[in-house]
Length: 261
Image (tube, one colour):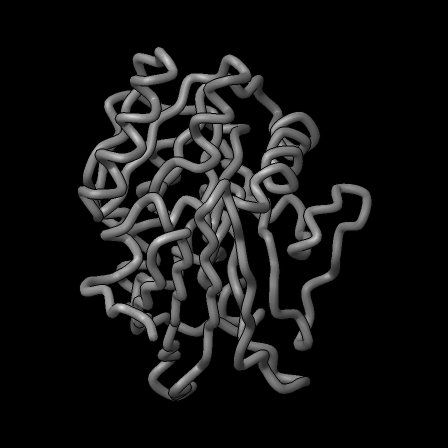
C-alpha cells in the first residue's frame, strides 16, 4: 500500500533530482562535446532555462564554468542554490518564466535537455522563449535543446517507464499518454512516481500538458527567429559521432542551435 503524496514532482526536488539526474553523465559529456564542436566562440558561461534542481549545472560548475539558470518552481530553485552554496560556488539560479526573462549579462551557451520546452503551450510563448534565448546568448554560441517530436510516419510512443536509485532511495517512474489532440497541438500525460525508502512507500501522480511538434512544425518555428540556425541534430543516445537526419519518423531529437550574427 502506497501513501499518497500531494502536489507535483517539482515540489519534491530530491525525488526530481533522482528521476531526471541518474543519466547525467551521458548528457554532460554530450554538452561538453557540443560546446567544443559547434560553438564558434569559447564557452565559459552557460545558462539553463527551466533548470529544475540544476542536476547538470552544478557539475558544469565543477569543471570551472560560470553557470546561471531559472525555473518557475521555487522549491527547485532553493534546492539548486543550496547545493551550489554547499559546493562553494557563488553563482545562483533564480525563479522566473522561461518565456519572459532577461539575463543581467549575455552568456556563451544554453541548454534544455529534457523536453521542458514543450511546457510552453502556445506559439507565442515558444517564439518568445527562443527570442529570449537569442538575446541571452552571444553570436557564435549555442542553445542545445532536447525535444520529443510527434512522428507522422509511425505511431508515437505512448508510454515509458524507468527507475533510479541513490543510496536507500528508489523512484520508479511511469509515463503514459492519456490524451493527444494534434489539431489543438496538445498532449496530456499521466506520470506516476512510486517512491521507496527503508521505512515508507509513497506514490505521487501528476498530470503534464505539452505542446506537440512535428519535425516540420519545429523547423518552421526555428525559422521564425533569424538569430538561430540548426547546426546539428542528434537522438537521445547523445553520440556525437552519430548525428541524425530529422524526418517524419523522428521522435527523440536534440537540436544544436547556433546563434547567428
